[in-house]
Length: 159
Image 1 (cartoon, rainbow, N blue to C red):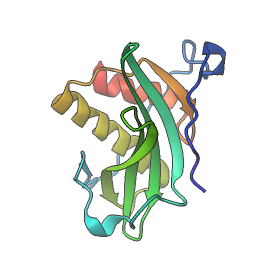
Image 2: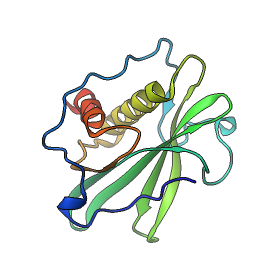
Image 3: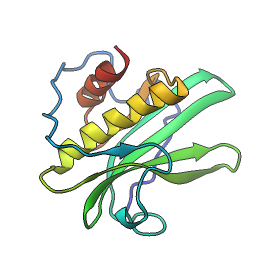
Image 4: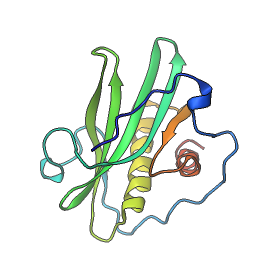
């Protein structure tokens, strides 16, 4: 069953992120023939509907103002031939979580952890270039990716 994101309602519900271990990212596989962005995932890379067994990576939040924010929870799905990065985002127009396939890479020779780190890194780079997305304001929850790894990915993208 896929984890349902929980929105923290107080600072004590957030993971420790001011003091964290500085880590290096797992080595990027070669080749890493990824595609990222909305509409970039081939039809045959993932099944229809909501994923049932995707691994929960993390949830991050941007909060520019009380009426202007973004909540994204990330998951990694193991398809037959591809790793697929999914974003579950809060749609405040409809008051519910929505799913989007936002990246994929062929599975051959790529571990779950390598796919998680490097697909998220490339997706955030794409969002930074295409939508001028700045660094997230905080990490709501860590999953398969630790706070230290998320901060290392952020350094690669936004520093």
